[in-house]
Length: 356
Image: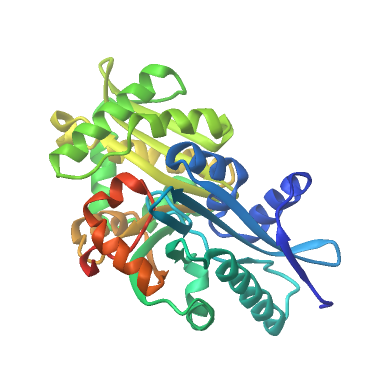
């Protein structure tokens, strides 16, 4: 490969960048300009993309976001919001390993140069699962002082031919039995973008999270999705029983991957498996539409029940890392502000909370 140049994404290059993501990223949603606009709408951040060019073609990219608070400082994520992946994306074909490594390290070096400054509190890189194999390069350039870990879980979807039979074979026996039970309940699926469905999703999500002591996605985040992401990037389905909504499932779609974003279920219907019904119906539908991967998102190492649930649908483990670069002065300030960080930097990963 000839020499390459790294510079920020320009407006006139957006279409080329989107095409690069679709062709080269296993989880292309997170770097998409529309998703970056969504992040800006929900977190009050500024987003950026570094691009590596060679011979007029994009050969690498690194999206990131930064949030600044006057008198406090700046936090950088690649990327924020519920474990969104950032890190380096490289052209899959035609790059020699030494060229790929040079591009990766240059993008990371430029990221460090951008992040570092007197006002930096912390900068966190959330690796794509396929970049985990190159973590030594990230360590060398970023020199993180803290690390965190998640388990990504992804189900590889079968081809469209005999999709239902092949999909059942991907599932574990207990999950197959639950799917069969759900199909006998007289449920119907309604795929809709109407206000009532989004209202049901947001309200039931808040109830579900309150029941387990979790923090729900605010209703404003769902509203921002509708404003920033095109309808073809969203799939909201509702399970109906005798005219009553019983569960809902929000997927985001990009490239050949479906992202499992928000599942909800009315607690009184849980024994009848309406969410299992929606997952089954959605998988069959997206297979027909050409999607080949179902990303369940990240799971904490101690979330055994959640991990088991996703594994039942044939999800395979793809561990990935959070790498935190922070100056000593930044860490000291974060410790002073520990109780305020969630308010100051909403939906940004700032630092391992147990270390503050």
